Length: 155
Length: 264
Image (cartoon, rainbow over all chains, first blue to last red; front, top):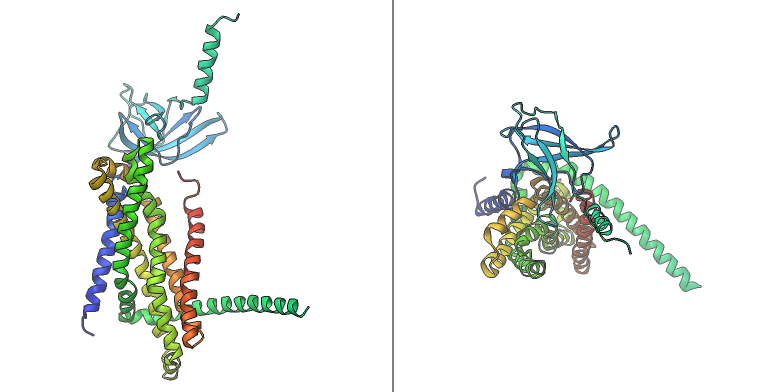
């Protein structure tokens, strides 16, 4: 069996098909940046997570440092339990504050980490103690209306 | 009364015939898988079919991908800029291509470009009794003729779909960034932030493999099962294109509801 031009064309076809796949996964997708090489797991409990979703980014000072991996409900405390992974390059002190924030006015929600001043760092599997829930727009509007009504004297 | 009885008889005949064909198709598919081992050992047969169904479909896939991407760029920008988010054009183009349009449109084109050719070839082989002659010479026609064409299609399809999506993204970039002037950095960075490798790219590839198997199976079966006359072959080709298109769209719905349900 000898090589033919047909083999050349098939080889060419496979190469550009693979190149297209590579383009899709590296340039279009986020394969290069999505996988944190080594990460550790942290937990945080919130009164209300709003619209936070699994795979949402975890950011500190605007930089993506991890991803939300799981969202559950703790029946003991009736609070939402968010599990997330953080790249091992980034260590956070034990009194870090976890907040659920929104990017832009109507953008997606993400988990913000605000480092405190403790000398001891959070270890894998530990929980972030101080948390701040998502801002629920309806509650905010309700509060605003209530305050307005309280300001103006009824007459 | 006679007319009604005839109607019922025809309906019953059509149903029995459909079930019969379905059963035959299932047996045909299992035989095809059984003899695939033999034919994959003789790899040059499959390579030849990759050439005929894959390489020869390159031009139509590349050109259509480019134009679909360009249309997405134009239409998407038109709508997005109303909400002041023209920068999200890259996200729109890349997500719609990798998730849906790439696999589906490439499979539809593949069915009409390569599937119909496979049906015509096998049908004509049957009409000119080449398949019977092979059987007489103790050459299994399923292992020699059918299986390589099937695997050629299954191998070509994901590569063609990936190429379609990549060309589409390129077309969207051409219109969005080069022609309209969307910021290049925002175009790519928002796209990379939104398109996930596992959820979007891999699911698109899985879809295209499934479509490739479905289209190839329909094409080889219709060819193998056709009435061995000129008219029968032409009918078989029509059936290949029609039922491939229906199978692709139905499978797409099923796969999408499994893959993307509950995801953001």
